[in-house]
Image (cartoon, rainbow, N blue to C red; front, side, top):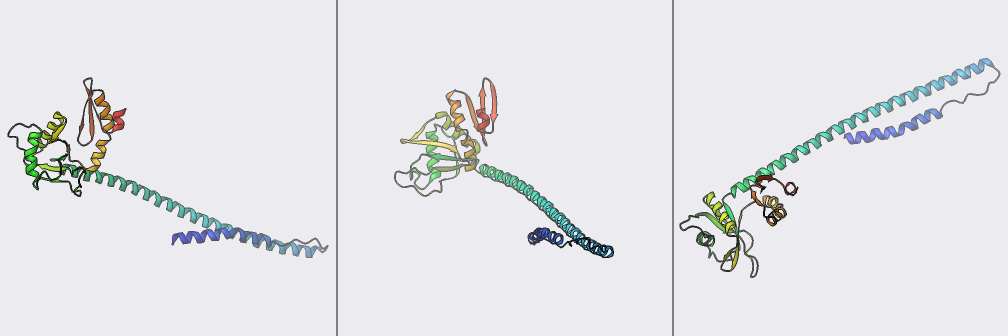
Length: 260
């Protein structure tokens, strides 16, 4: 409704110059003196009255124009205020959504705190019992001390469709009962380097959310440079690169900071 009112006011404002022009065009022509002073004075007075009326009309038109301009300025000011308020609200909501997304991602990763993702085991080797298979295979694979308890809460293949012949097997996702055991398995895998099981290369990773994996993946090029230069580093949860060089340790939250 306000938009229609503004359009109507603009149309009226556009017609105002024509009203003024009409008033100006209606001004009387002052005749030449007739020689009769009395008649000439009457003619002049009549013309002055007509001019006065025309001037009054112009003043009314000007007042109407000023009123409409003032009204339009008021509406524009109100529109600017509403737009500014909407922009501020959008900024606030964007920040809130980002905070909530970070919290959800953090909750997801905390729920996976005891999880390990294991790649490389062929399809079907678990024979329908992944927990039993991994509890038997991992201690030997990682050369753990005899009697090490790696009890699992559950284990399963990832939920992707079963691959066909020649395709990459689905990873195992294993949830351990105790967090220290998870750390032991990952540390043993790092210490041993390359892991092989019956000719298959096996890899162990923390089970992280995709968003956190993407954040950690940004450090790949930096880690490669550090390895080439034999500089000690570590990537800590959630995505902090810690570098030790000449006895000094520095932490970096982004790859850009580390590259500097």
